[in-house]
Length: 83
Image (cartoon, one colour):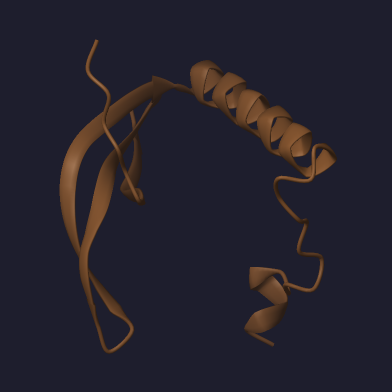
């Protein structure tokens, strides 16, 4: 099995019940704009995406409980930022 390091994801799409997204690495930042390179791709069914979301949410909650991460409650939701 190959391990791929990614700084994030990009190009999320839903086509015929399959969610697809690219795994990307940041090559450099220029004036607050990231220069990205695709390093892999993921395709998941909708149920698989929901299971993945649940597993990642549980992992994040555990890291918060263990003091590894701090929850940031001050961030405004994306909807309210546009008002």
